[in-house]
Length: 296
Length: 296
Ligand SMILES: Nc1ncnc2c1ncn2[C@@H]1O[C@H](COP(=O)(O)OP(=O)(O)O)[C@@H](O)[C@H]1O
Ligand SMILES: Nc1ncnc2c1ncn2[C@@H]1O[C@H](COP(=O)(O)OP(=O)(O)O)[C@@H](O)[C@H]1O
Ligand SMILES: [Zn+2]
Ligand SMILES: [Zn+2]
Image 1: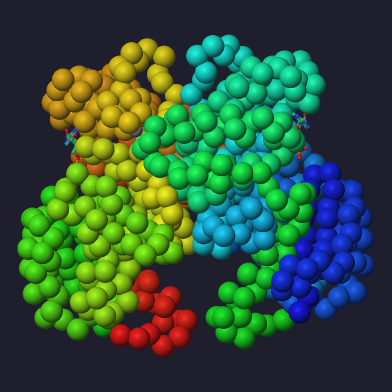
Image 2 (image 1 turned 135 degrees about the vertical axis):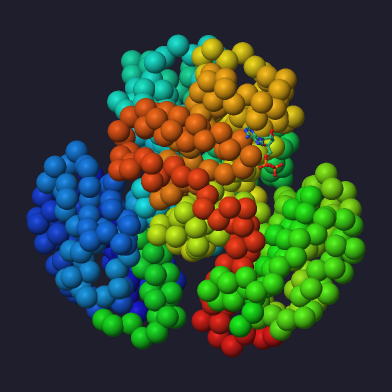
């Protein structure tokens, strides 16, 4: 059986056809243009296969409340031609197979959960620290598709006592994204993250904020594994800093047996998104077919 | 079909027998003594019925990782005779019917989700602001039973700029519980919450901290409904204060259409725990029997 996987990003789309075991049979990458242009390329790709189900991980925000008639619609994006485009419906209608959608970070979490760094865990939080900060959560095989499309990157974290930077989030100023995203690093130091590799204090402060956020995520969601990815995490030095700060913050209240197995890098290189979209299709189809015959 | 429900608290146990529709047929309340004493009273109560399944909402922390051999064990409690007692196993072994367990706050959330203030919502967060602060989460009918038994009450919240109280949490000092629980109110003002009813600033500050925490919970979990219960919430004035503060914090980033329907009091009086334990039994049994014949 072949499954279709779509990783829909603001700059590029990756589409793949894969089997039950996560083997990718065919794959294309294309730039994100107008919906119709992008989709017609994707359709000619998928039309070569008889797909059993489709999984989509999409940029957003997306409407994920199944009770809403615009379920699967891309909402308030700055990519104006995609605003109010229903990406779920486009695939569901063309291929008439069970179609599943979640956020890009949720599918990345699912990819790592099924085949990557969290493959032996029961739950996993995937945090991307890139231009912005986002996170996705999988618990017992299910992604958390909350009604309100949570925006985990915008939680407030206690400020470091020596930090006077006002924060760069246009909505909240000094939320996590405003204090610790790649773009906030640029706003704060007037240089890009990768040019700051040798500035120890930069990464101490960055690690401090990420640990604060991870403390909240841990206490609220209780993930068994936390995976940190995205451009900023290319600073490998951040992993040990975060582990140490987090241990200090938790103050033995929650005992993490092996901190170096709790806070880990992704292991699917840049394929967690597309692998996760594939996992979404496979898992969604399995659940659906366990409920009775699936209409295709 | 009759279902057994157990609300296990540190001071009292409530046990009930109910039907599919949530009608309570019989109920007992008893003080929490030694496990064997307490259980023998409960057994003589349940032995009168032919139970189909049992749901337990327990004080804790409890081991909720199904992969652990001590699944269902009460861990680190100050009630020493219950420490390391496996409450799940006690019921599962005696009645040999499908038995389900979660935390007391998760079952309270489930009770309100199924029959109370959140009965029309897809997800709900139940926060209890009592001696301590705890919260439970239900999403699409399933409670979030995280491996790490999350302790939502202990998240950090940004301090109010005029607040100099160091915080009363023995682990973290100024986490949410250390700044806003009933016991922290006592530690801060040297008076009990209910004697402070007319002190406007007390409730302004309390509402400020609760709104900060709710902001994090909302962004991370995306609940459709937030229910605030527990002794401290008897100060009705807190509801409008929290709604107003939260609207300010979210700063239109996430639009809550009707704040007075988003932040609400519980509606099952003090029965959300026992009703939730009943719902846990009913829901768990329904899922289990959909997977195949249930061995009893
Ligand atoms: N080696 C590096 N060290 C620190 N920051 C980096 C590094 N490489 C990229 N970044 C930062 O990561 C951000 C881009 O993150 P990335 O995950 O690649 O993309 P996006 O979040 O836009 O999808 C930018 O802010 C960039 O400055
Ligand atoms: N009317 C009230 N106003 C403010 N605080 C109150 C009120 N009634 C009780 N409390 C506080 O609530 C806490 C007890 O909460 P409760 O939910 O009843 O119990 P517990 O959390 O111990 O199960 C105590 O700290 C008490 O001072
Ligand atoms: Zn923000
Ligand atoms: Zn604490």
